[in-house]
Image (cartoon, rainbow over all chains, first blue to last red; front, side, top):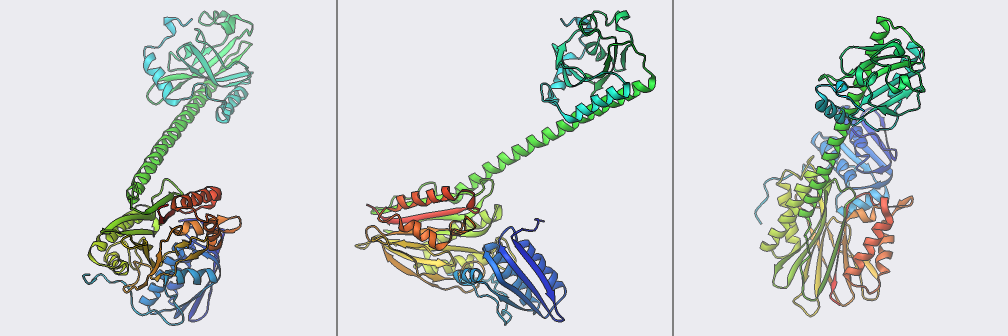
Length: 119
Length: 422
């Protein structure tokens, strides 16, 4: 377990059917576990909706993308609606990766496909 | 000066035992100094010593109330005290035939009282003593001698503790050396040792490891596809360590293989994406999870070399034109290893004279620059400054930039430049 990064904070607020994780600072390899923990804790309350407010995330790298993507997959598997409010750096990176940010709609189906057709 | 009568029968093994603690001639140390000061206080004497009996001297690890750091191995005191496992007491040295010839007794110091408990190791070697000394004669009680033996045991425990710490430290250092060697060897296997010679083309690359003990997922490769056509790949597998290295290897060789069977770089990337999703390294909740890369086809069969860039979610390559202007490649495309369906829109650039295309990983743009990050703008400015320099000179400039950024470069950086030969 890594110690919390001083450059990143996650605060959780819950309502009857929704959990909101508000992230502030730099989301990278050193801070990803904080958001992962936040997501796991939120999942345990089985909310209908999970909102990750990343408007105040000033930096994100590939580790951060993985956390968000995994959170989206886990939500999809449990029929939890997930939505991300991105900041400019978050938007920019997802655009670079051409990866769609989960918005108000839940992402449909898991992408994993082990039955690749031959080339 | 050492007579045969003060040399224990196990002397060779005893000296070897002393060496394993690596204590001789080490600097003063609070733990041992506390023991001697406590011994002096408990006995109400001016002097207390933790001594180690070396082959030709008696060296003091701690000396309370005495300036000397070592004395000769003369009979009568410590040298004699280690001959026995029990306590050694001289209550009135001037009238004790065992001690009266010792320089500390006969000399200026005029020592009269000496009591010692040997420092006996668990395997039975007497390394030295804990001793208390006075310039007046004195008697000792059994209780006091038990205290001295207990203090001797504390000293031996302390020596054992230090030895264990030294051994752990040495083992850690060895593991560190091993892992650094392992990581750099593995890293080398993921990067080409030399770039191929391509007629009419200048190629240069640089790899910067943020931590030499860790294997990075950054890689680049240049490989032949068919006559006059070459593949140039540069990418970044998420994460670090052995799994990232294994996944990097998978990506690198899938690229090379797919390029032999399908014709366009976009098709190659689609095949590689399927290969990745079918592997244990990519896909939902798997480590390292995904990969971004740029695959460019360099066609040298035309009048001018043509570079077709296919970008899979990777940071955009920079094109520096002959007039010194710079721009990001417009190629678009999905990252690899997450989505079942990926698509790409390649962009082509003619490598006319003085055009250089620079591929790099995000460790460069994400490097800390003061309170902010290097970012796109500063990188573009650095590359623009190279004006009409060739690929190798551009790499030199970026290498220099990485050096200047120093600790700001927190992640690995792979950078590769391609241009026409001068």
